[in-house]
Picture (cartoon, rainbow, N blue to C red):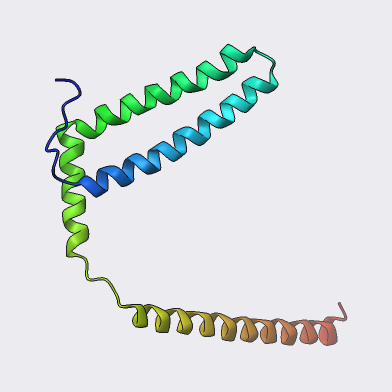
Length: 128
């Protein structure tokens, strides 16, 4: 009962993506903890089993949280909203990216020119 999946056929990819992201964070944290415990010379059992236990605990916690009706309903509605999004085409993204890059370069040159002008002005007027 505690480990039953709420609405198992819905929001499959959202749940998997969330589990994958959460799992990466937990595994990297447990790896860092393992390295710290191993460096502290706590013994092989402690430096190995504590991170494994924490990783297992967070796995059970995530499974329990993702099966709660309120969280599962949120993930289901989030996936439904993502399906409604009008995604830009590859060409539109490429053109928009090119425009942004060109504008950043132009602004960099304009700001550099303005900085040079102010530097020359203050050097001539105030002798700084």
